[in-house]
Amino acid sequence: MSDTAGNDGPGFYSRLAAQSRFDDLTQGTSYTPLPDDWFVGTADIVGSTQLIEAGKYKLVNTIGAAVISAQINAAQGQQLPFAFGGDGAAFAFWPQHLEAARAALAAVRRWALDEFGIDLRVAIVSVSQIRSAGHNVSVARYQASQGADYAMFDGGGLSWAELQMKQGHNAIEAAPAGTMPDLTGLSCRWTPMQARNGKILSLVALPAPGAAPQTVASVMHEIVKCAERLERGGHPVPPQGPGYAWPPQGLDLEARATHGEMSVFRRKIQLLGETLLAWFFFRTGMSAGGFNPVHYVETTGRNADFRKFEDGLKMTLDCDAQTRIALETILDNASRQGVIVYGLFEQDEAIMTCIVPSITQDDHIHFIDGAAGGYARAVAQLKTR
Image (cartoon, rainbow, N blue to C red; front, side):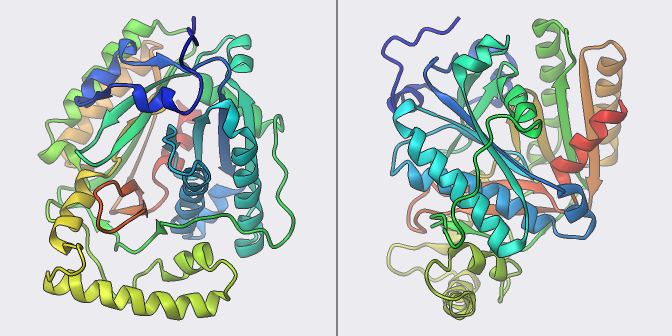
């Protein structure tokens, strides 16, 4: 049951105590039910499988991150919980934000159509409607680093909302042609990160229908503890931070996301200058105007969301062969016992898509995924289990 007394409005999420131990999030006791009068937004790219097969997963990731970027900017400094899913995203928000959230979703859908010819499904459903359908939406805050925390979701409500969206319910139509979302801060500049210990492993483990929550929690705990035996817990970002090249590989995507009223060509020229200057500071390590490139790069790794809970466990791991076998043994056993369903996908690199409100603050956030399909490919394997 949800107790909404005093919990409505934007302050609900920011008041939650942040969890510092990721393993604690395997337990349902770490989560707080969302207020009944809140809403859940979802987004998913139509035809993402074909885009991935065509080698456009960086584009897929950028559109998924754009959904979150637009909502962060629309919230105007108020903190809202969100989850990046690779080829889509989900978020929750208070009732006073409904019109702004709807407008931001409609604008991102229009932008994806106009810029890339991609259909982005978007939808909004109330938390009360989710609960009426027999599901719940609970949230926790995980403190990834001193400067960044991420929302974790439990209860099955996000998964149900996404399924409803894919079936055509609660849809938000695209904004009028030419409408641009506010994607300020969305950035795609880092180079792909090579696996250092074997392969980049994308892992998705979800509760099987009807499985006992305590049994599911026990399996999730076992998976997390196994992964934590990897060097740095399997973190795919090198200790010294990701690499930076000039011109960055994501320049065209960033230009298409942030050109606003100017032409894409003009924005590219502008970004070439900005990124060349950034490359100089990253290469030399020199500081200027409150920007310390060494600190920024190190913080980037600490702030990255390489593991998360979103109605289940999702991890992007730099994984050696021995740990890969150990993880699959745990997953196979739990799957045969009807506790979870899971999907795994291996690739050589990880990629990162970022939202950077300010280069002089430590609150920049970084979404990690496998470079060859990542979470989307792992989720596709769920059907075969």
